[in-house]
Structures are given as structure tokens and as C-alpha cells.
Image 1 (tube, rainbow, N blue to C red):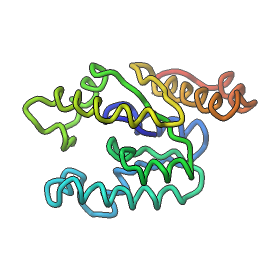
Image 2 (cartoon, rainbow, N blue to C red):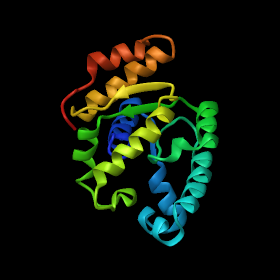
Image 3 (tube, one colour):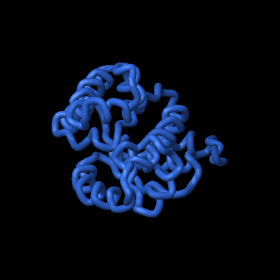
Length: 183
């Protein structure tokens, strides 16, 4: 799962993993475990370049694991090395969201180092301009919108099926049986 902060990589990814009976891994959580620091502390103590180098190493390690749903940090997919590793070991899914949706979501949390500025919306616009062309290289794009996580997860499953060659019997069964109430 790739995309900007607030697009739903973690929340939709968790639900997707649950539906598909796969492990869910959040790269940011794994980075924090490895460093014994929060991402904000890593940025503050060592800077973004140091963080990005560690992020690349952690994601490369995580991609060697068995089938899983992996939510990457917002800047992780910008690394050509990480994009290549994802291409070789998985299928990338971009959860694409518009600015108002992202801002509504990111304002709920205070642990976003890149948004600790006087004008977080301007920062987000700049990030969108710089990152969306790179995210567009993902194998699959799904519009992130204000619906239940179950609905978004099913959108991802349908997009993955289309990318992988059409709906499978498993998808048809999920669509018939999946409880699509909000999670």
C-alpha cells in the first residue's frame, strides 16, 4: 500500500489483510521498533535522510517475508530502490485521495513530522505535486474516499483482481458473503 499520509494505507490495509486472511505489517511501526524511537524522534534527532535510509532497509527486509499486506510510509515509494523491490516482490496499490480528504484525516493526529508547520495544507499540496507522479507508477490505483474500510478493502480486492487477470472465484465468494458494514 502506497500513498500520502492520511490516504488510508494502515486502516484499509488492516481490513484488507483481515478479509484476505493475511498478515498486516505497517512499515512505520516496524521502523519505530527497530529504532526504539518514534518517527518524529528519528526526524528530530537524525533528520529525514537518515530516516529514509532506515526506511529502505526495513522495507527491503519486510518484502522478503511471506504473503502479507504492507503499508509503507508516505515517502517510502519515492525511493527508486524501494519501488524496484516492491515490483520484484509484490503488487503496489496506490490509495489516491484528494486534498480535502487528506486534510480532514491528518488533522486528527499530531504525529506527522512533515506537517509541523504554520501551513500544513500548503505542505500537503507540495507533497501531492511531488509525489503523485511517482505514486502513479504503482501497479493499481484505488480512489480513497469517505466510506467504510470494508468498502475500500473490497475496492482494492476488485482492482487487484482486474490487474491480475480478472475476478477469481474467491472474490466472487467474498462479494457474496462479506459484511460491508462500517468497521
